Length: 615
Image 1 (cartoon, rainbow, N blue to C red):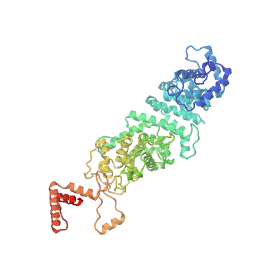
Image 2 (cartoon, rainbow, N blue to C red):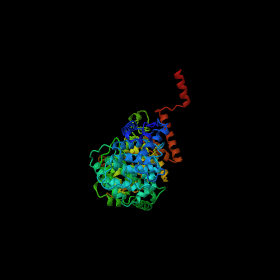
Image 3 (cartoon, helix red, strand yellow):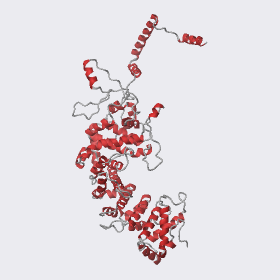
């Protein structure tokens, strides 16, 4: 019988010969080194047959068993094999588990590994079965077994069920709380929780019922988030300060999201159809805030952590939605934004930095999604076009339109929620995102500015989530008043969003919104009616005739050209007025013709003159 399988791994015949431990060790280490980065081994994606892989997996699973409890038909040879491997050198166990980790990256041929007995075996080697004891740090064997479990839980639902049946959630929570636990073990334990909560709403709901889970996770993650907030160097390795913080934040997001879905909170929050009264809006928001508060109950202590991560860590302009900003923003979206909640759970000063930091994240992200191309203007093309394809190098940040439609909306929606809840924040966001002094001499969506990119995205056909989110943000910034919104960006740019919202606005109607009447009440946005006057212009105006403001095209939001103004004035005339003006023009031309100042020529005579001249 062959001593190695078609994959070059020990066969059942070889693993049953303890005297050949050196051969077993060398074959295992050679396989692990050769196939470390392979994602598939079975044909057609990989080089090996199903039988070759199955034989390899079965041999290793049989050798790595710690107990035969519950297995029918176990022989004395099986017991001898199990007891022999228990006493084998540490490095052989590590090599065997590393090989199983590679084999477990695909379901094909991994039946014995992904069976209930296989998952139990891995949990035993991982130190999860029985539950870990206090003060016992994870060993290298424990960590390698946990890596095998991650692959199994990721690709196989039955493995997740088997893991939970063996009290895997409770054991994992105990493992990550062990004092001085290794970073790799904490990261992998957090990955278990993420995979379970992300793949199954039932398991997320089960975790959400644990009253102390929020406090437990805060205790585990705080040392690592503090390390990041203080901007200390992140260690190398699988488990480090950044990867652990990210993984735990993803768990928090999954659990709070499931709670909110159960409470009936939608992704876009209070988006509604048609026009609502202020009272209806307020009642709707208050009900939604209450649901969100229930969704994050027990996790409130994460709010200051999220805010500190967002505000204290500098934004990478080359990748503004990289970790930890992206996961912190995603989590923040699940927390209620109303002032009462913020003031209760966020006593620090960093909350005042949220608007400017989030605006910076958004601005940098939009520059990558819609890069400005100066040469496009010269070629009569639009200078802001979305990036179509992801980068060739997977290590480079991906801001292509498909990826951006998933990653950009959360930061937009957090800004929208803050704008709806806080008048002072709404004012600050307006000044940054929608300044009054934008260039209206050309199309509003063609400049190298954040507001131009926002307006450009209002009509996107390839980024539906981004388009809807941007519309909600701008609508919130303009006090949810269609007249204010259209007066700033033009009815043409807002028409699609307003139609989707069930709001029909007349672009030529006078705005019905009230303007601010005092210095204290400046939360309402002024209707745009032309460029603002400078102090010197105002002084001149006081001495002489007032200078008329440049009229704005209500459709495009641009300053009208002289031709457009003339056409608009003409269109406003009635038929009788148009006839009268035409008659006056004809009389004027007749007088000029008789005086000899101009000479009117019939078009037929002009054609004959041209023919004779060309001959």
